[in-house]
Image (cartoon, rainbow, N blue to C red; front, side, top):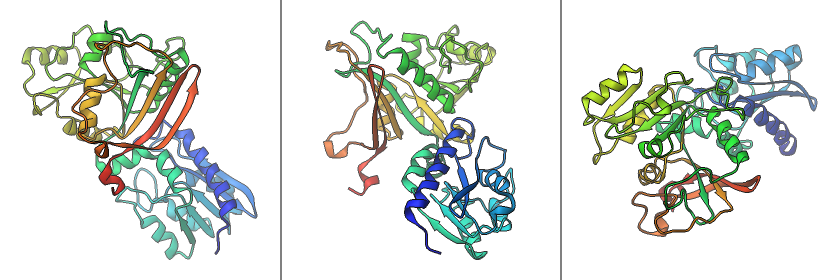
Length: 379
């Protein structure tokens, strides 16, 4: 059966819009949307609302009912063909009498990858794969990283002046951006599984690291895990991010060389401590991210300062950037720059930003994109 590109894209875009409604709620599952169309009319729609609840196809097919017989299903991710927390979606698609299926992208989960499409095709259903695939991949960037790299997707968020400063020469950084930009950051925090900062940020700013509404309320939003990277355990026990009354969990990541008395003190106030063998005297970030993935943390918002961000970039552990640029000039040779670390030796070795987007947030500019290194782009 031939697919009509223009019409198919229209319905797949609707499915992608539906999928996005699950942002911040489905982890460790992907964002998925689905619509059922018959004779050019929408007869069913749905999205995956939360891990453990029915998948998008189930909601869409339930809404379509008996009318699904002979219809077309548009789904942003390959339907599953295995038993997990819920039964296989392919069985329900087949039993509903769906005639055609348009799939935006194959599921990178090895338990699913290709098997769902194969199962549908064996049942005689026409299947098209790749419709608006890039849009679907960008929507599920965190899930893809989690599945293919066995670690969380790391989003580097930073705020800088137009001359690339993240603080003044005295270390003052509140506030570089305006209220609207800061509100957006809290929204993004509530949509990610964890926030990560270095000990320098804690000592300098003493942040809570919570997702809050404009009135300061942190109870009505989904709270990310708070991760503090501190190789020598300099963090004060009175740091606001360690407050046991805050919603969400705090983890201090350190090395096996950390002082035992401070380890015990942190544990005595209910703080979980992650330890790994030191890497050049620093926290083993590869090991930390691997263990976070084992805890089903699929996304990390990296809000650390230049030191932590620079070391993460050097290790190629940043997957996405979210940079706010304020219309200000701090100047000063002693004022800290956006990125530390060693950096690349040659321009051709640099990470490039793909899927580049920018938009104005009040008076600030927000630039976002996915990082691609030379060998990943085939250069």
